[in-house]
Image 1: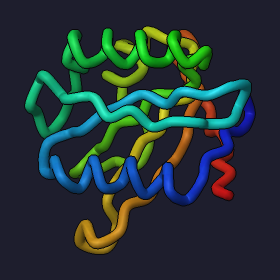
Image 2: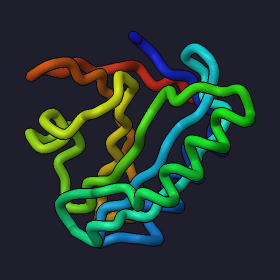
Image 3: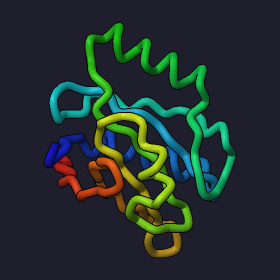
Length: 134
């Protein structure tokens, strides 16, 4: 996938979720069709860590059930790097379990603003994916 399309409201929902949990990492799933996001599903970070995330298995399962019942697909995962960097980490690469776009949200300018970047992870490498905000 070379690009992912999402609305300003969906991006703001992700930002609100990661801001509410900073300085801990926050995470969630993106449901949609093709390369278009239709829903942002926040999931608790069971790790309660500033440097890694582990999705709460019950919330993740419930989100997958919701995605299936709405005839959508898992097309992305988002999580924050509250202390940077705004790119994927070695841990992100080694723990990637789904062939979906990974969105990393990282603060800029004293955490008043957050930047979102998309990535496609494969094997031991990654490439940036264009995020089209409409």
